Image (cartoon, rainbow, N blue to C red):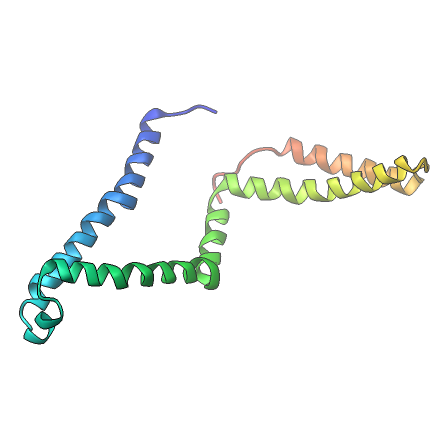
Length: 153
C-alpha cells in the first residue's frame, strides 16, 4: 500500500487539532467567558464562586464526571453510536470489504471444521458434502475475482 506522507500528515494534524488543541482552547474559553461575563455580574453566584480558581475547581469537579457519564451513555447505551458506526461502515469501502470477507469466510470455516471432525473420526465424506465443498470453492473463487473496493457507493 502506497503511503502519501502529505495526506497522512494532514490527517494527523487534523486529529491533533480537533481532539486536543481545539478541545483545550474551547474549555478554557468556556470557563473564562462564563465566569467573567456571568458569574462576576451576579452577587448570588459570586458568593458560590468567589474567585475564578474556585469556579474552575467546582465546574471541573462536577463537569468531568458528568461528561464521562454522558460519553459512556453515548457509546454503551444509546442508539446514536450504533448508527454512527453503521454509517462509517457504509461509507468506507475498506470496512465494507472486511465485512464482505467475513460474510464469506465464516461459513467456510464452519464447513471446514465440520469436515475436519468427520475426517478425524475416519469417516468418509458423502457426495453431498463433496458437492458442498466444491460449491464453497466456487463461491470463494468468485469472491476472490471480485476483490476490488468500489469507491463510488
